[in-house]
Image 1 (cartoon, rainbow, N blue to C red):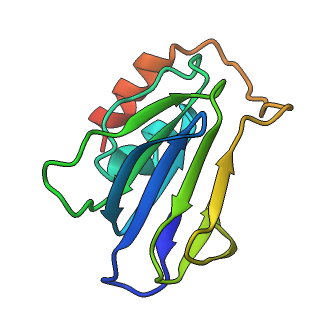
Image 2 (spheres, rainbow, N blue to C red):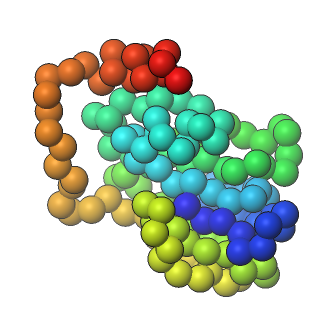
Length: 139
């Protein structure tokens, strides 16, 4: 996640896929999520879809985007070269899994890649979609 260091100060981002700028927007921050994270903070921030965990990709969810007509969240294949550029001169922080990772400055470029060693989860033979449905109904 990329967030502003000062509350109420918007950041400007460029999304670059395979070396081509595909989106520019202003928002309070940006969530970069795996499919597993799509049902966590990304969804609660209005991030849209519940992503099947068998899909290899990254979900990009702007936090409180400036334009009401902004495009929906992007789901980008992990096979693509994905970069996020901070275009603002305002300081921002990179936060990974809730842990502070570092300070970002204007023109900072974050490259998002799939790990060569994926996280392992215990499979208790529960259907992902039933599990999500049950959790969402009990909130």
